Length: 521
Image (cartoon, rainbow, N blue to C red; front, side):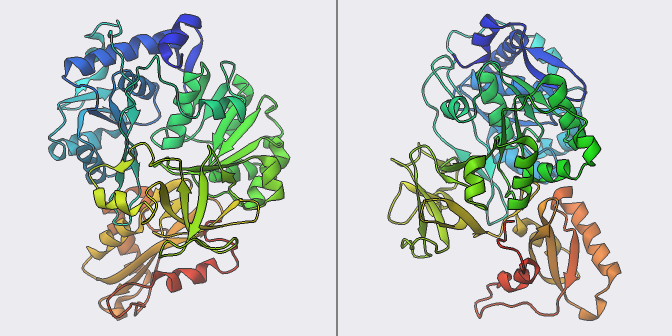
């Protein structure tokens, strides 16, 4: 049994979730009761298996209620980046066909703005506040019984991944047809065997819960009966304090968090007892060899890295012992998959050569498709092997089958574990009347891994100045979420383009990566 109801029977008073900052807790019994009420609300609103719910909220104890309510109702749940602008959020809410939208007062400005953009939404619920057009979440919840429905079909997430066009893509799979009671998270065997997770686990989740990995690691931990300690916002010292306070056994950090913890003064690092940790998981963004080895020295050989995508069409795993023997590798293929490295034409390349990374599974991956995007779905598969799928990354294999990442085909930027699409930023800058041409790419950042850099060609080259650069940055801040705004702008009088107009971005970007073994590190 891997649902809150089963743990509510066995360990009703065990905390399912603890908020790291406020200390607010919710037991498995409370989570079961409240998610059952919300599931009844979804049914009363006419939602049936296969329908969609969207949520945009900060890390909040109510987030998990919405997740489990959707999952025990056979619904798709789409989680939305809380830092998006109204137009960005509105696109996803509308594109995923959400019939119920749950937001919080934290994003009240976005909540108001997306109403006219999302006509398919039937019911809007507001947590911790009031916004015209939204019903109070708590009042709506308490208007429905806490009894579970006779049938509880298993739902799933439909999260959004990156796209080279700048618009994110919904990653859709068919429902399994099983009930919550019959269902079992796919990664449970990995959690139990490789990560030593179980009912005694206390799992620290320091990242924004709208991301796929924090969301699924947290909820799958609960499915095992574990307690999740969720940080409202990451703080390096607070993370150490929470590990000591709650005797955290498992935690997940991105490389940026590792870097910030390592930069704490030695006396601060030594102040906290982290000996309860049995396993630390990292992924979502590249982790440099130096940072990983420093964390192994500090925490011990308990660092486990994975490489995967929101598409969940393949993954690699590597533990500390392997990482020390194969520095820079993200591991070998997991779950019985096979990795192939191919050239642009789809031909397999020899060991050691860099090419497009494909994961081969035993069959076409469980109906995976980009929601409403058949051409993009087809483009993610190998032209001759429909059961080979790609995430758009380039890499190489060594003789032992260990994968090393080299680059990203789409030039997508990963800054602190967050995916940023250059095309979106380029489109925003091109709206400025002074801009003739623009190229956006990632450049090295010791803390974040990468940061956003924009190179701009002005219509009037004589207007190049620090004041003009600041004007363009202010323009970006008006049109983009904060984390997408370039850290710096450089001016160039001419861009390298092919006769057909294709921008050669690599020559612009490569000078910033000189001396780096990989553009991902």
